[in-house]
Length: 463
Ligand code: BES
Ligand code: MN
Ligand code: ZN
Image 1 (cartoon, protein in one colour):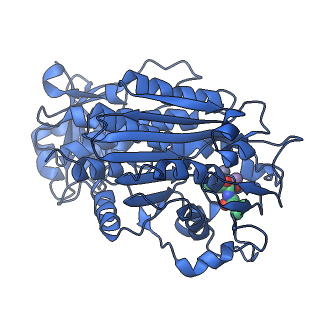
Image 2 (cartoon, rainbow, N blue to C red):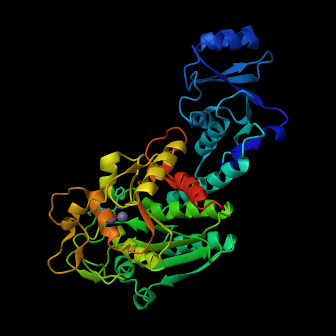
Image 3 (tube, rainbow, N blue to C red):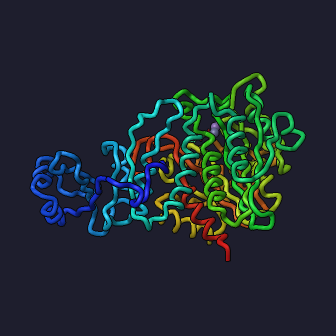
């Protein structure tokens, strides 16, 4: 992805990409010559927004790419993404007066992503040269984070077990000078992470909890918690095949917080970063936890199990309780937590939950600015009663059976494990793009972390 962008001064020859509006097309064609004009006519190219046309030069080579924009600029910030997959391999450059160069470059690179772990790369690539005043350093930091998140999600569970996920965290922090530890297997019990152990113990691949920090000890504490369920069969409440098919992505929350951590560390933001990820497989075995079980939790609440497929909130409950113990300035968790979030808002608009009004406002504004859509949903207290249990402190699912407000009640459950953090925000992400769109190739997806990178950069800027 990062390799798909270069500075203009670094390429000797490239095909220019010229922005055209429908009204302005004739004038541009007049400048390019008759061959280009008749070529556009034959191909019915009218300059419509987000369409493009490669036009030949006199020697039959591609002389220019015409790209349709609105009078006001790009019709979608990532509109240029389409070119990253459809132009012939080669070097291209944005014409000097091309609008919104930074967004255009980002959209192009985000779309250029391919998951290449199991295939031989074709070797053919497209590079985009952008004006030398575009901040490629910042874009590179963002692209590396997004790439990490996507690669981790796309890697199937046979190669992404609890140990592999924990190792990815260790490697990221080691590369940046951070340190931490991983609590594995039975140690989860002695170290008081009973719900992480209960959810993960049925897998032949031992459950674990990764806990890493980076940065100055006295800097503001920003803690990221991610759901790291490397595969979700549903447990004894087994998912039907169609619902299980995509469940390698159930560590999408962990993948996203790692992508965000990578951006924070690469940009050397002045924060004390902590990442906590419970890494487990929700598997079926003779020692699986069961519906009706009552689990103890790190927080001290007893939790009645209504459905073993609501495993994410359990492992997050213990991880959030740990995070909360040192009262971080900002506590963020990300999780592919509920199917209900997707029912409510679809795959491309993750809901977020917080009681911090100012934070909610900032997220909404920055999500829009970063083209990283997010939508606030409420921690609506009256629904807390859905989680009442007669025989434990709390039930982890809505047992009234009606299936109401599934994403809200999951968020409310998590809120019971957070008390001391100055601000807490929870993201119920989908972590996957089902069908390609601008800036979003199909497959594992980074959601919310470009927005959060801007937010954390802004909030904790050196002042
Ligand atoms: N990982 C799933 C949620 C999920 C499903 C996210 C599909 C994205 C797409 C989670 O562990 C789960 O199974 N949740 C259940 C909860 C229910 C049993 C209360 C759900 O959403 O159906
Ligand atoms: Mn589940
Ligand atoms: Zn799950």
